[in-house]
Length: 167
Image (cartoon, rainbow, N blue to C red; front, side, top):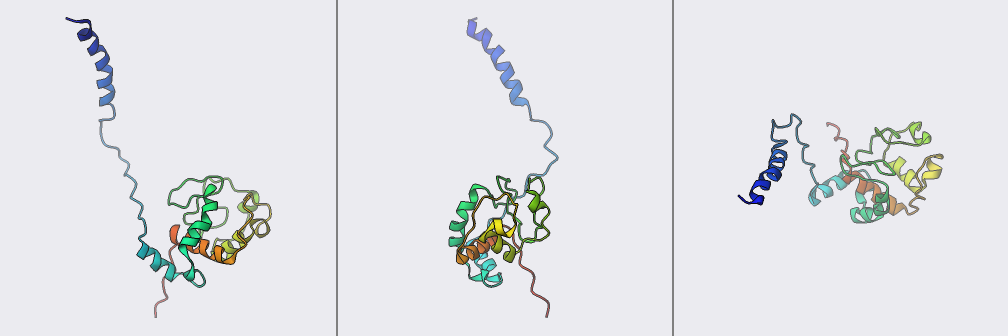
């Protein structure tokens, strides 16, 4: 018998043992549900359902204008916090209330809920809107860019329009 024939089983045994690991019972936790990605038609319908002036927003311009925000923010459902919090579900959320994000004292103690009007003022100049916040972004002075970013965020962050009142 050759030396290799004797040594091979010694090296193969640990490999086969490790390969068998994890082959037990399936996990009791459910796999995460797939995230629905809106089609262009769904985005257009959602955009049209927004109140004025956001229903006239340019989603492509909003995406481009938001590009500078991506250095600090994610927008996808379940996305991580970075230097700034994840913005999924921001509309209707109390300011400073995203779990596990380290907000400034000014934001933690702010007493408002994010809506389009508040976000518009925030984006114009975060420092004057809420003195003492830790956001370093100087703001978006152009009203059209702010409108488009807000429309983009409403479409991309899980915003659900209010149902129409029953007649």
